[in-house]
Image (cartoon, rainbow, N blue to C red; front, side, top):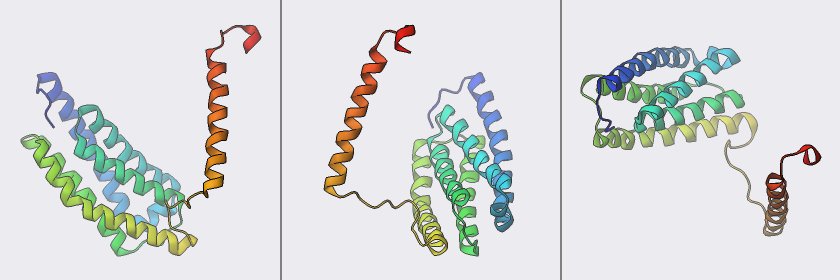
Length: 187
C-alpha cells in the first residue's frame, strides 16, 4: 500500500485499524462459536457485515490485500447464510487461518506500514488456504444440498443463442426508452 502519509491520512488509517480490530473480534467470536453462529441468522449477518465493513474501509484506503481477503471472507460467509452446512473443525480452522492473516496485515500496517511486496507475499501464502476453504465449503454444501455451490451448468448452444438474442433485443428496447425525452407522455 503506497499512500502518501499526510497527517490526515495517518489519522484515517488509525481509525480504520481500530475499527477493523473491532470487526476482527466479531469475526473471531463468530468463528469460534460457528455452530451457534450459523444457527442464528442475526449472528451470521454480523459476521457478514464485519467482513463487508473491513472490505469497504480497506478499499477506500487502497489496502488491496486486506480488501481482497475480506471480500473472499465475505463471500464465504454468504455461502453459510444461503446454505445449510454441518460445521466441522476443519472449517473453523480454515476460517481462523484467514483471520490470522488479516490480523497480521493489520499489525504490519499499524507498525511500519505495508509495502506492495509484503501484501503480495501474504496473498500468495493465503491463496492455498482460500482454495481449500472454498473446496471444503463446496463439499459441505454438496453433502447437505446434493449440489456443489457456485457451479452452474452450461447452457446448450441453442438455448444460449436464444438467450443472447432475447437479451440483446430487450437491451435495445430499454436503450430506446432511456433516450426518450422525459415528459408526461413517455412516463
